[in-house]
Image (tube, rainbow, N blue to C red; front, side, top):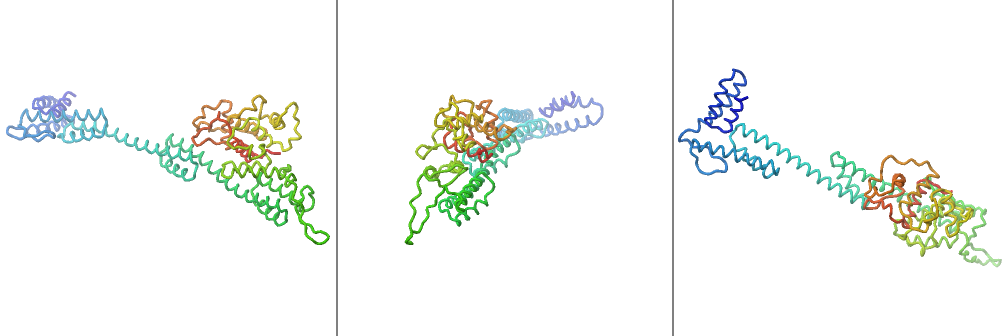
Length: 481
């Protein structure tokens, strides 16, 4: 070991004294492969020293100018180069910058081959490995940030184009926890788009059938009935289809002469043979029956007026859905403002009418007021516990809990194992008691977060949102009697 250290020193310093000291120690070693290797290494040092003889020019060292003389000046030149290279290697190690690495590498590469150069190269290899890793990390971070940005845009706009772009960026990421999180967020957008596509498709088909049924109700001819029946029969099984079939049944009864409730606005012929027209239908006369409840022309006109004000509003389809079921509590377009807050009793009234079509049969007990019958149904069904705060605006958390309570009376609810609430920014703010209800509501798509990925549990519910909640509830599980 002493001999090997002496050889290393001779290789590093390259002076005659150090060479002689190392040679003396190596010569004392027992003959063998270790001794042979050390002798070969010393022969390189000896060859270098032999070249530096009086009158010979020493090789130029990078960074220096002029011609050096042999002897001690040449040795100093080599030592300076080694010191310069070591300083630059240390700087590269401390700063870990690519510029300092490149400078150090140039200085080390210019050294003559020796053990010191090998050591410097090993040290620089560590710096290079770090720089390569940082470069890969930087590229990964850039890719992650781009994917996060695209996912955020997809969540905000909820369009097929932004979803596809975000999916492309996320799929290109290597497997990681961040990628899994982004895929989970995109799955929410994907579910929304799939549901919207289905709703839009169904709404278009149902809308055509509904228009045809309305035409048959207005004209009450066999031809109009047959055309409407054909469209309705082609619909998939749903509450909407059953509602339209009920309306068609009423028309058929009239056509068969079995329903005297609906009086046609028909032409008759006088004894003289002159055609006469019956007077216009009384505005309050029943013109159709929906879910067993008659509607007057006044009610029909009010509903049409409300829908006319919602031509470009996102809740129009849901509004039509409830009107077809005769589940509506606002009288006309003047009292229905879609962005106004909903009170607890108004929300209870919507839910109650989804359960009970004949409010006149409800035993009110001591309850009084506009929505006394509906509140009694809510108390009896268990989706409200009392009447203390029914005049106050309802929060999204309170609405969700009522929706899930309402479902429990009709279905066995199993809360999903996946914690969907954690995918939203303000999910941690939801009360512990309400968290399982939110998970179920998200799982069944009764509710969605906003474009900023918030659930706004303590935010107020608007009339439009209340309509959407109850409409989705009825579409998921038909609970109306």
